[in-house]
Image 1 (cartoon, rainbow, N blue to C red):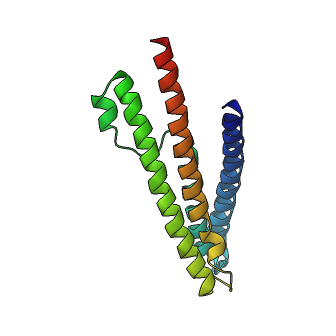
Image 2: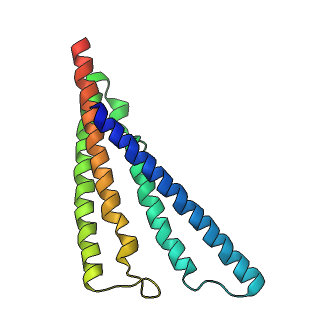
Image 3: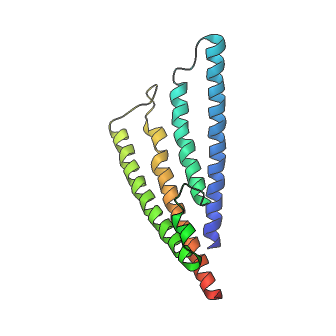
Length: 165
């Protein structure tokens, strides 16, 4: 289990560095656009579209990191009502269900990306749109895997606490 946790940590570090790089590119690009518009009455034609596409990447990578740390958006009704082992069991079920839903979203977004490739959609300057949209199935896939790992880690804790009781 420790190997899986180490791989999970390594992937999270890679995601964090990618996230930092993308945010730096976004800040530089936005500042450049402002300077060009304010002082030179021009701008990079595709700059705003590029920034919008990078927001998609930041969102999915951030969501994957939040899922790893169990800090994603959730409804915590069961966590507030249930106590002890019931709470832990419900947590495992919620993680498994969330993993399944993220898997379905990954498959749907993969089909979407395939159709974008098939129809040769472009974003700007003949850049294929799927270059930017590929983050959707990757992001949902990472979230699905992370929810599944969270379920396994919760189950491990659940059974460890049972042995102590």
